[in-house]
Image (cartoon, rainbow, N blue to C red; front, side, top):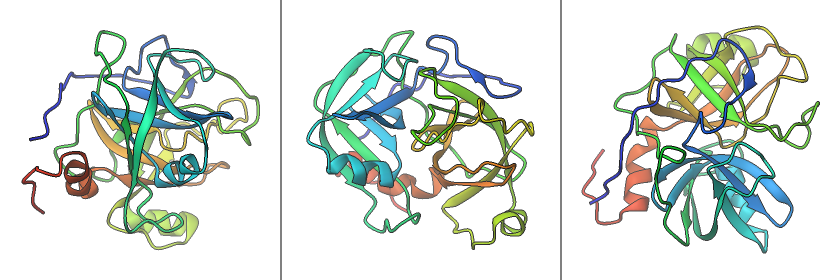
Length: 238
């Protein structure tokens, strides 16, 4: 059966800011021979959760590895080669944008490196969440620092009024708590963890600028696929 260490993390942020060292111990940097590609969340001693588009891009690279225990996008931290990448079988473009990455090695947990807890329920509109990640290559004001910002979930109707497309049940729409949206503060953070309280609510998928809503992939709605992929012998049912 799938088991995990489940510590509690309670982090509060009022606007985008640089994370303190080890303030987000479940953060992972997924890298290739070109360096950092996207973010991920530590699920277990040898499993990382990220976006499917990240997994697909990583598959095309000769060098594939994951770094944990660092806030620096170029920092050494603790590195593990990638053993296998499982992309959700229904993934297409932005649909089912979720993947799990198995490491060739075992993460040793300590006060600086910890897994994040799975959600116990679906996140409701109005939930305050913490989104952490690094800037993407197209983001302005590049920095190596891990960044964090508070976001709030909104209803599907409110999301459609903002950006138009139909929202699937496994997707969640968020807006930033503070209308900062300055270039030096915005980060794409694809594949990064979006946490409600102490539990992983979503994985970052489409982060938008100009005070527009962003669309991400819910974890609770796809939890069965995640657990069965990690542990094929699990008896989890829908």
